[in-house]
Length: 531
Length: 95
Image 1 (tube, rainbow over the protein chains, first blue to last red):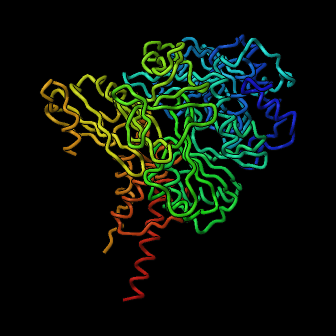
Image 2 (image 1 turned 120 degrees about the horizontal axis):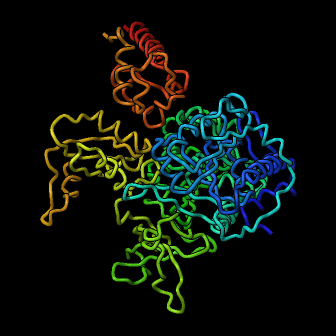
Image 3 (image 1 turned 180 degrees about the vertical axis):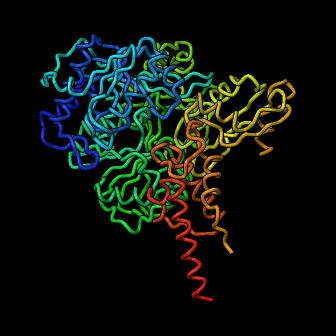
């Protein structure tokens, strides 16, 4: 029976060993190859003393190698932590220290990067190289090992036996992965996800999307984004092929459209901004995308204007709007009806199978009639156990169900404001707090502000969202600095040393002093109006 | 008359000032790969395309937004020159 994510692989490999599991460029791995290679990685991890429950870092872009690494970590009973190689070193090493990572699985190109992080992560002792050259990186060995860090080359992994790895005492409530997301007080929060949480989403998603072994699934999202749980695990459950989008391909819409055609992608999952770029600049009429039978989007609001154009350009596909925070993965879904243009706004829909959602109005009552507004709560097996090592932040969002009097039932408060429409679909209205989305990425304004405050010359800083049709929000920082010498370039450089690119403010304004409200707080509303 | 002398300087300046996030990349070489180094991502590429359109008054077609035309400052300049010449030819033939 499949109660751990890796069982999806072992079962698909037993059923259909020769079907393609992962395709990357001209190379692909069959299910039996993926099964065998991940067994070898698992054994390499166990040989290092990795024990069930340990956190293993994944330092690789989405690739055949990283999928091998992920299943290898899971089979060793470990919990994998995807590390965004585009993030500044300080942020990555903070995440690695926080989660106690001692071993990292890295693709050959990222071994030097892993070594550079080692200084800031005393517990890190070994890097295992995953994969030979799957793309245009060179070779399977790492080169000189940096001081204090052991590098286990790919050949050593391949020398491990490839048979099934004995299962340790891992159960479905144990952690499968931790996904780090923006933290409002300045440090990223690790969302812990158990096998049970993940399988709850995976089972629903594979069914809702109608995945079969004939599907070729592409999810554009990087590994540290929970959208990538779909293409790795839901495709695996169905015996479908996960097709890896080449790095940077999504930047060039015409190339992307051509690639989708060539690779015969049948199911696509991404944030809306990539689809907006595709319909706006991808010259879709010049390609045959008839194989694309489902377009799934999540992570931010898809402007109806662009969705409508995409649906007109590719009328044969299903269009699925999926909603859900990392803490629960997708919890509601809405299928956009074909023909006649999408509703405005596109609803987030109704609860997924085996998930329940409800909204609580400001007066504490349950939202039950169209037009009533409340905060969305989620109930069900996909709820995270909590934030890694942050019990008080966890306690703010995992709360007792206000409508369950018989026993203490934990529910998750999303902080999203919603309302109901006439058909019982939920509609997303906005946030209650200082979290915004940009290009689908979650940004706590407080985290950007904390980074600015860390600069010695910055006296006060406020970060405000500027609505942007393509990106969701852009970030505008208003700063008052000591003296007069601080330059825009200095501030940006300071931010880039601490924050991933999408969190660096797009707009910087300097002023003598920030305006205040009558209670002495910074008057954000006034600053927002002054834009 | 469209000014295309010092094209490399104009484009290099814009990219260096507005798009480069990694201080170690500056000063930016005209042959430095912009994609592999992460200077161009989906957001900065869009801004660059808009800059090129506005600054040089040329239409950048969808089909031209491909890695070859944006691989480096030199590549961008080659593309811009070719576009400027072709629109000058069209203007000439209508004139």
